Every structure is written in structure tokens, then in C-alpha cells.
Image (cartoon, rainbow, N blue to C red; front, side, top):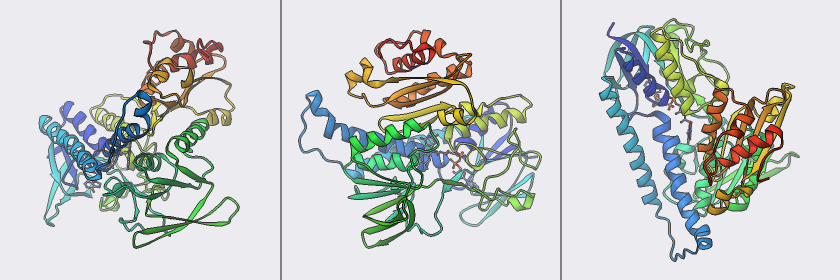
Length: 468
Ligand code: FAD
């Protein structure tokens, strides 16, 4: 065999898995159909969206919050081209980093579409049509996902767009309509709302970020409306969208079945992502994808029905998150060499990078209720945090859910400043099966936003929060 492992796809699942394989002494190749590595996350996902979120946050603060600090500005302007150029530069720095890491780890990289000839033979079809066959003992499929399209709503990539085009707009929309109140829609909606766009979110469910703890969605909706003027059409079923010239008309049915119409200049369709397997030749090795979501079925060790062929990341079941894909890449590499790695899928944190940020780990209150679990809940508002008062970020709260009898932390749900960073403490605590009192007894630096987690843990322990 030419290789011990071939990885198809260089997103966070694929590139991290390949590096771990190489670290473990496996001769490894990666096949990527695009000219840059890093997949969705680095090129059109996590990294570019965070670059635009950071730029728009600076702008929004300058326009609305600097004054309270006594900082005066005049002629504030946003140069959209420069913002997009900076974002592209951030992408370039990150993708170049992967090229460097591949070289450093002696991983062979092939540009082209990888497809199965048989379970040990992968054909690489390059952009000029030429092909090459590679052999490997093991193959890791890490081909990721693409935006889900609604069958009755064609994307024209100009006015009716997906997240990919939304990361490259050349102007601030006047009225941006976002279909879907999930993470991606709200992050991108926030970017343009902060830059001055009117943003309307149309969501079929009765709440935004519906998979997270219910309290978080309510608070986020309230704050996005208050701080950014975003409007929400919840319980609305989108029935179509048409673009004409510079206008987009979105039609929907309200909860009573009455038709409504929204007119804007751009519409982002962000209704989820679908696993991507086109061109992989799965039929040549007898793998069928699931009907719903097109995912590749795998067992608990992420191995497909074909021995030696694994699948990880967005293309398999579970949360469609970069860090979940990375952990699965490492898991499979270690399995291949006979180690016994472990992933606790209950402890994969989820983050929404709006401001305030939203972050969650473990069970939601709704899940605990449904399971009939006996739990207690402690909350702490950022309004009572000295650090939050100093920075002027007092929206939001921390909620700690703990087992009524053992006090073990079952879930932590945060909306507030730097929630994305605070959640790491909760993940560590829960990995070590900490009790709420354990967190409450750990010394937290003052003044920090993390004190809110300690206070919520104390509140859950026995209503012992100090500052509430
Ligand atoms: P991908 O990153 O999708 O990579 C798959 C790669 O495989 C691609 O490069 C593709 O070109 C390649 N490929 C596909 N088929 C073939 C083939 N046959 N041959 C060769 N190459 C092939 N997640 C987070 O955790 N945090 C965030 O903040 C976050 N923000 C996001 C923002 C946006 C706008 C979007 C769209 C997504 C975001 N995500 C975020 C999700 C995250 O990007 C994905 O979960 C992650 O990229 C999945 O990694 P992956 O390795 O499974 O696949």
C-alpha cells in the first residue's frame, strides 16, 4: 500500500485527523478539491464569519457605545471593501497555516476530487481532468457539508444567497431578510444589523436558536431587538422568495395561516446544512447515505459498514461543529493505531457568536424535564457582575443545572459577554463530573465575567449566590 491513511477533505475534521495520523507514525495523504485547505470552517465558515463579526462589533461600539465612555467620534464610516479584504487576509493566514502544518508533518496533499474505486483505491480527479490513483489501508471521509436549499426557493447567489455569499457582500444591505433563526443566520444577521442594515428574521419554530436551552433564545431575541433593532417573525413558514433587480420579496404564512410579504434587498437562506457526498463514489463500495440529511452511517467507532473506511465531522451524525469534527479526526487516527480514545458527545459545547454571546454545554432544562430528571437550577444575571458593569455588558445570565440529589452539574447555559470563553470552564468541570458546589468553591479572579458562573453554581448549590 502507498499510504496507511488517505483523508478525503481538509476541513477541521480532515486536517486535524491527518495531522494526528502523521504524529502517530502513519504515512498519510489528504485530498482536497479546492485550492486552499481548511474546508468550510476556514474558508467560508467559522473564521471568516468571526472576522466580520469582530469588524462589525468595533463599528457598532464606535457608533453607539463609545459616547458613554466619553469618546467622541465624527464622520464614522464603514469601508465594506476593506472589511472584506481584511476577512480574506484572515482566511489566507489560516489556510496557509494548514499548508505549513501538512509540510511539517510530512503529509502528502493532493488537489482534486477524491472518489472511491474500491475500499483501498481512491481516484483523484484534478481540475484539468487528469486523474491519479492512490492506495491506502484506511480511508477517512471528511467531506463536510453544504448549505441546505429549500426546493421551492432557488438560490441565485446575488440577492437570494447562502452564508457563503453573505460573507462577501460588497455593500451593507438596506433591508436584509434572514430565513432561519439558527446560529449562522443570527451571526450573519448581526454583522449587517451592526453596520446599519434593517434585519428581519423569519423562523418556522416558535423560538430562535431552538435547539439550545429555551431561556437563551428568549433573552437573545430580546437583546438583538433592543440593541440592534432586529425584528423577528417566529412561527412563520416561508413559502417563497423572488428577486427582481435589486429587490427581493419573501412570502410567508404567519401562525394563523395568513400570508405576509417582506421586501428587502438581500435574503440569506440559512436553514441548516446538508452532508456533502457528491462525487465520492460511495456506491462503488456499497455505502448508502441516510435519506434525511444525506449523512454517512457509522458505528460508535466512526467506522462505516466497510472495514477500514471511516467518516467524521459534518458528514456524519451529531452536531455540525468544527471542534466536534476535530475531535472525531483525532479519535479515528488513534483507533487506527489501536488506541482506545473517547469522545463524550454530551460535553460538546455549542456557541453563538452574537453579542452578547451564547454558549451551552450538557443537558438543557427542556431535555431534563422530558427525561423526568430531578434537577435544580441556579441563575445569575450579568447585571449584578462588577466586571460587566465596568464594560457596560450587563445583558444576559448564567444558568447552572445540577442533579437534585448529587449536585452533579448536568448543564450550563450562558448568554452574556465572553460566554464563548466562559463555557470552557463548565466543560472542564463537567468532564471531571464536578458538583455545582465544586465550581462555587473554586477561586475565581475578580473582577471577571467568569465570576457569574461561580455565582450561578452557588445559586444552584443551595441558593447561596453572594451578589444576588
Ligand atoms: P468541512 O469543513 O465542510 O470540510 C470538508 C472539505 O472536504 C471541504 O474543503 C471540501 O471541499 C472537501 N471535499 C468534499 N468532497 C470532496 C471530495 N470528494 N474530494 C476532495 N475534497 C472534498 N462551527 C463551529 O464550531 N464554530 C463556528 O463558529 C462555526 N461557524 C460557522 C459559520 C458559518 C457561516 C458556517 C457555514 C459554518 C460554521 N461552523 C462553525 C460549522 C463548521 O464550519 C463545520 O462544522 C466544519 O467546517 C465541519 O468540518 P468538516 O471537516 O466535517 O467539513
